[in-house]
Length: 460
Image (cartoon, rainbow, N blue to C red; front, side, top):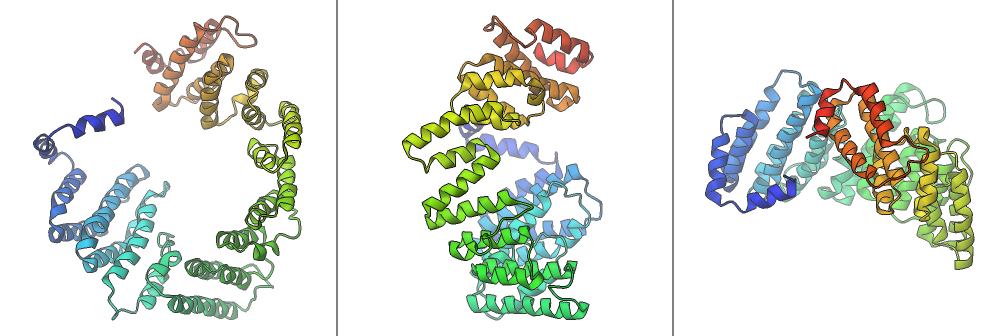
């Protein structure tokens, strides 16, 4: 049953039936028991507060290393705690909500030190708690607390990147004057660090400590919505910023609708990454509504990339006669393009479905190197346009990829693709340059005949 259907069926059950089912689950899994207990306490904020605090302390006391696969369970547990604090405890008692979130952020070091968070899910929940911490502090409104110093001290203790959402959102809690004081602290620390190291922003590459301090000043600039401070923070670190640093500066000016100030960083070509400069210019001229400059930049981007996206942006600025000339030329350019996915994407955009199919059939080796998501998108378009040979080619590539790499967890997908191929065979009379269905099936048997779990799924 599909998820949507299951949800609809569950909603038809009465409260007693659902309660009895939930009760029957008690004792099967400790993590599930805690979730059920939290649900039961949602009408009792005081009891939920005690339960959440107990869970946070339990997580802190943990000593066992959490492997990658288990990290998702821990992240789910943290997410449930954060939801309980935000949705139930915060409206009832901002003070309790703040204290619980503060405790949660306090334990981040001991948690991150014993978890393989390669998926970023545990850190992601701590980042989500950053904003809740600020919201709860704001709602509590305790004026006896020096919030600026408290934030400064909290950030200073952090080494895992899981408090990186705190400083950019400090405008939730601090006023403009306080944010400027915080910025001054970090700027002063940068200058002191240069003095301590005996270096400057012109003589050597910045150390890790300087990069960390500069990042904090950048984040305060974001909270202040001040791109000039962001630029200043970059120049404090490096008098001659590289293209990545310039890109960040320009993006801040664009974000806060100051395109003219961004232009001074884009007036010369970038040898290493000219396309990025052109894409930034595209955003800047769009904000300035400078149509002649915008057209010039978009023509350069299209000539550089030849993508359907760039073509679409260019023709938006052309008169009808020019548009038709460019579109007609684009078909030939696509057929001659060396990169298959760019060529196919463009032909599909131009509604040249047969030409796109012919290109796919003539370049099957390249099709096999195309990303999964793009292939599934192609299937949808080609099937809708009844370009069935291209659909077959895509399904075969998807199937081959799973079987060649013995991805047993995806065998159900490969079996589904095979069933589609069997259906398509009834509609296709001539496979042209492709193997016939019988030939392809025989090839699979020769290469993957021993993968019984796959073949069993086809007959299901």
